[in-house]
Image 1 (cartoon, helix red, strand yellow):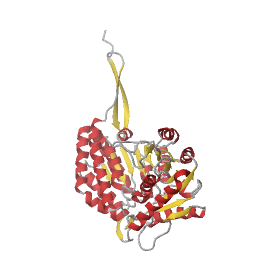
Image 2 (spheres, helix red, strand yellow):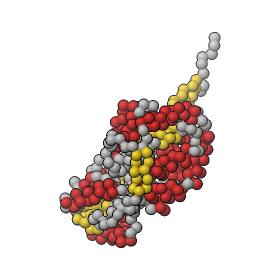
Image 3 (cartoon, rainbow, N blue to C red):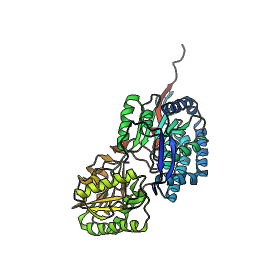
Image 4 (cartoon, rainbow, N blue to C red):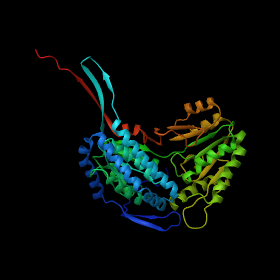
Length: 464
C-alpha cells in the first residue's frame, strides 16, 4: 500500500476533506503523548483479567460486539464514503465483511486448541495457547472496517488487549468503530487513538507492547520491524505489493482483459492485491490490449470510478504514469488529470512498458494497468518474479503444466490461477520479502496472536 514515508512532525488535529468534491468532512484531535501512553497503560492493566477470561466468554463478548457493529453498519459506511470516497454500497460491503469476520473469530477463538504428545505411560506433553498481552494494531484506510475487524477480532478473542490506531485518512471511521466495539467489551480491552505518523511511531516504540500488527505501506512496515527489534514485540505485517498478472497464449484475450481490468480498476486500484503490472504473451497481445483499453474506456465514459482517497494520492499516481510515459510507455486510455473538483483519476492503460519504468517497479495504488508484451509464458514468469515484493500474483492459463510452473517459480504469499480475486472463505497467506511477514488474516491469525507454552507432566517417584 502506497502512503507517504513516516515523519515525526507533530500534528495536533487531523483534517479530512471529501475526495469527491474537496468539502470539509471534519477535524479530529490527534492523541497527545500522554493519551497514547495512557491507552497502552490501560490495555496493560486490563490484560491479566482478560487473559484469564474463559475463551467461551471472550467469544460471546466478541459476538456482542459484532451485533453492535451490525446495528451501525450504514452509519459507518456513510462515514467511510465521506472520508475515502468509496461508493456507499462498496463501503457497506466492507462493513458487512468486517461483521462476518468478527462472528467467525467469535466461533473460532473458543475452539483454538493446542496439541498433545504421549511419552511414558504416566507422562504427557501438551501445548497451551496463551495470549501475548497488549496488541497495537495499525490499520489502513482503503478498507478500514474489514481490515481492522480482522486484527481486532483475532487479538481480542485470543485473550489480548488492544490499542488501535486507524489511518489518519479515516479518523472518523476509526473513532466510531472503536466506540461501537468497546461498548461490548470490558474496560481497557479495546482502546482507540487517532493520529498521524508521530502517534504511530510512539506506539511502536513503547515498552509494554507485545504485538505490533500493521497493514499499510512497506516503508512504515519496515520501520515498525526495526522498532520491534528494540522492544521485543512480535510483528505481524501485510505491506505493499506489486502484484503481477501473466497472460498465456491459450486464453481468450477478451476474458483475460476482463480479469485484468477487474484486478487493476476495482476500488480504483486501491487494494493491496490489485493487479499492478501485466505480462501478456505476444500471440494474444493485440486483441488483449484492445479489449483492456475498451474496459478502461467503458469505465471512464460511464463515470463509475470513485475518486482516489485524496489529491496527494492522485498526484502520486499521475507522477508514476507521467514518469513512465516519459520513459517510453504509450497511453491507450486515460493518463490525464481530469478537470473539476475532487481526487478523480481515469482508468489508465499503458503499453510498451519496460522493466525499469516506475509503474512496473513501484506500487501505484491507483487505476493503472501497465502492460509489457513477452515472447513466452516462461519470460512472463521470469519478469513477474523479478520484484522485491511478495504479496500475490495471478496467472491466466489453460495449461496445468504452466500453472504448476508458476507455483514453483513465483515467490509470493498467494498465487491465483484464472481468477484475479479468487480464494476460499477462511483462507490465509504469508506475505514475503518487502510485502511483510506473518499470517494477517484467517484462522492462522489466532496463532500469531498467541504464544505457545509446552507442558510436560509425569508422576513423581513413589515415596520409600
